[in-house]
Amino acid sequence: MTKVIALANQKGGVGKTTSAINIAAGLAVSEKKTLLVDLDPQSNATTGLSDLIQPESSTIYDILINGTQVESGICKTSLDYLDVITSTNDLVGAEIELVGIIAREYRLRDSLETVVDNYRYVLLDCPPSLGLLTINALSAADSILIPIQCEYFALEGLSQLLQTIRLVQRHLNKKLDIEGVLITMYDGRLNLSKQVENEVRGYFKDSTFKTTIRRNVRLGEAPSFGKPILLYEANSSGAQDYLTLVEEMLERDRKTSG
Ligand SMILES: Nc1ncnc2c1ncn2[C@@H]1O[C@H](COP(=O)(O)OP(=O)(O)OP(=O)(O)O)[C@@H](O)[C@H]1O
Ligand SMILES: [Mg+2]
Image 1 (cartoon, rainbow, N blue to C red):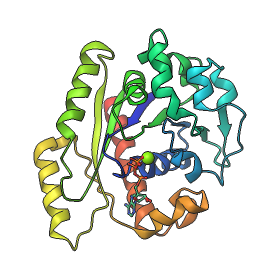
Image 2 (image 1 turned 45 degrees about the vertical axis):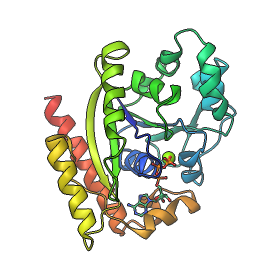
Image 3 (image 1 turned 30 degrees about the vertical axis):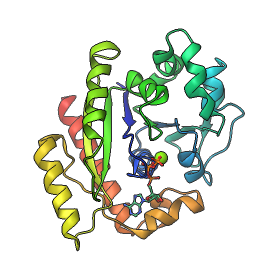
Image 4 (image 1 turned 60 degrees about the horizontal axis):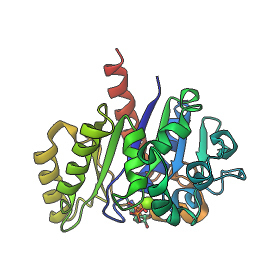
C-alpha cells in the first residue's frame, strides 16, 4: 500500500523542503521505494537533490497544467529507491492557471494515479501558501506532515492551517490524516526552543513526532551541493535526526499495518 504524505505549512522557512529531501533520502536508503514531488515554484527540493537527479524533459508544471503524462516527468536518481518529479519557476503561474481547470483540486491526485502504486511512499513538498497547489497536495495525500520551526510566533498561523485541513477533510478528501507535527531547528541551549517544544507537545500531544530535528549547519549546507544530508555528511546530527525520524515513521506504519 502506498502512503502519500504532504509536507505543508503556509509559513515560510520552517523546514518543509529540508524535511522532504531528507525523509525521502532516508526512506530510500531503508529500501522503501519513494517518489518526491516538488510542488513549489521556488524549486528548492529540485535544486537540493540536483547532484543525484538525471533530469527528464517534463516537470510538475507540464503534468498539472498541460496534462503531460506523469511518466515522462519521473526522474531517476543515483539512489535506487528514490525518484523525483522536478519543478521550475513556471509553476508560479499554475496557482492561477489551475483556477480554470475542471476538477482543479484533484489535478495532482488524478495525474499521479498511474504511478502511485509503484511506490511505498510519495512525498509532496508544498509551497509556503494555502493556495491551489497546497490544496492539490492535501487532496492527493493520505496524511500531512507539519514542520514547525522553534522560533518566536512558531504557532502563529497554525489555526488557519488546521482550519484548511478540516475543510479539505470535509469537502475534498475525507481520509486526510495528520501524519505528525515535526519540531525543526531545535537548539537545546535556548529556552525558546524548549518553550516551543512544550507548547507544541502540549497542543498536538501524540501527533507530535518524538524525534525533534536539531539546528545543524550541515543541513543548511547540503542543498548547495545538491545532496541530501546522508550523502553530504552522514555523521552530522542532522543526518542522525532525519534517520531517527524515518525509523519512527516506519515503526508507526509497521504498527498500523499490522
Ligand atoms: N535543522 C536545521 N538546521 C539548520 N538549518 C536548517 C534546518 N532545517 C532547515 N534549515 C535551513 O533553513 C532554511 C529554511 O528551510 P527550508 O527551505 O527547508 O524551509 P521551507 O519550509 O521549505 O521554506 P519555504 O517555505 O520557503 O519553502 C533553509 O536555508 C534550510 O537550509
Ligand atoms: Mg520549501
